Image (cartoon, rainbow, N blue to C red):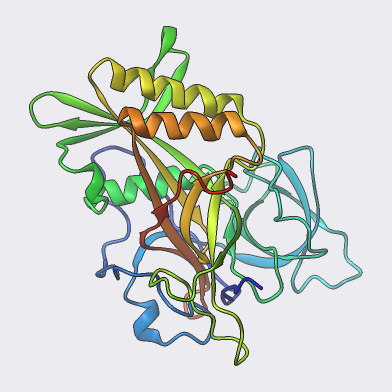
Length: 329
């Protein structure tokens, strides 16, 4: 059985950087461990937790139970403290995908952020869900992956993308400018490095990995099996994601540089791979892109509560090992 990692369930949000030149709101950074962090749960030692890099804070935080998700962008949540007899609150769901495997647990615990704009139609946004009892919190705000990467880029913390002298966001490219790449990094000598970001929420057990130093060890019941999970993208067929891979391959074929950065928004994955089961065409394209020279980078993040300040934190805990052929027979 695959081990999972439990996180505490409180938290809160600060605004993302809004301009290329703006320094990240998070000024305190720590060294990132080389290997997977063991036992990141509510009982983790403070020294373990504080040794990681904060890349996002989720404020105005409320907790509750997910009643249902519908119409792609909406969800009904029973907010904690409002009483079981009260009507569920409709919130914004910032995830266009099916959220595969995240909605299976009835009345799963969720995190909600609160909008500063009191005139917004939906005051709260679904930020994270705990899809397994005692399991990891999973960040479901897809666009937050771009903010996480931007923070790391500003701090020069993604070594595989160095060196660069400037960061540009949302740049049109591809055939007739039909695509928009998340970042273009200006490199020394006048070059450019195109960077596409994807948010990863789907995961599955990798299998027996008791001898692997990257495995996440459970602090649960004595004798529980040690196992690792692999984050997977996409969680459904995605024509848009396929187009992005093809566009990046065209950049490299023309002599340019390109990279794909996958942000794993859950703390129980030490590995990443394209999801051949959900979109075999995309999986094959990623393999071909890597062979052509597109850099494949996977970032591991963990979500945890900050009781003292009433907020949720997203911490960067290092690189995931990339396994492009996982799931192929």
